[in-house]
Length: 452
Image (cartoon, rainbow, N blue to C red):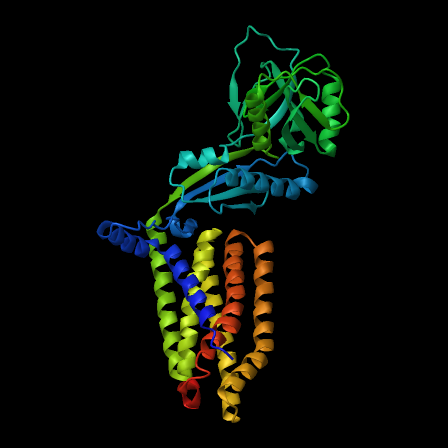
């Protein structure tokens, strides 16, 4: 069997590239010296792409809202609040905030919404990213309106501004909680921009009643007490879908559709408290975590080399490759790293060590049985595989469950653990035995004590 030098060189080159991607400063220093002292060829630097850090490491904004769910029927309250959480998550994600934590907290009849935005240190910017406290409702024309009276505004218990009954429009039961979807469309004949609205079943019933009694009258679409559109009802609509026409241009139609989609909160919310979490504490936590990971790796490396000798040295090299490739994947996806995510990565590192130990113990048994090194290595890899497979796949299933079922922090742990487990299977079964095969036709293979 030929020595797999080509594959080994490829793996080492890939690991070196991943290492430069993880920490491009090393490459850039060398390239700067090269480009400054040699006339040609000019080499490019690595693209600097930082790791994304979560709120506990990078700091950020912590916002607490209170949801006004008093008017929501008790049997619909859970689904309504879940919809509220989903709307806020979509809105924050649209603004590019990394891994927002959005969760509902219940205390008796009170419902609070916790929003954590990593890397956002401006409370005003954070509130704008969420959309402040938008609340969408459809209002009908108020026949008792007196245009000579001044319009006034009042603030309800949730901090949401509403207009008094003297306003041109008055509130109805139809609010954003009944709006399923809004989008920009075009008339098939005139190609004029329009906005299409789609309501759920209950919203369809309310919209039918609302349009039936307001034919020929304006119907106001209001967000936070501000009328963003007031189309005239042409006829009663009972299909649960409506189209807003007469819009000036495509840009105005797209803005209206986005405002409807962003403002479709199921219930009004009011900002209760706001807090900036400094990055200094997060930097200390990150430094402590990295220090713990480094010491853990060094202790594992010493143990592996002392107990398994050359095989242990191969395992240490494999773990280094595993580490730099895993970090490169975290940066490329990108994975938002939190303390929980780092814990998942460190745990997966331990799983990779465990796979190597199973192979080395099998190798030791095969060598003690008198088999030559090449045969002993093949048998060790083949017989250790079932144990490695069962243990790693079980852990991978748990990681998948945590990612799809858990909250944001648990998701981060499950994601890094899952990626690490997949890599650990590849390295412990593929890379480490490949390094050991390099010794098959050397004198090192004759000294069995060198392999544990």
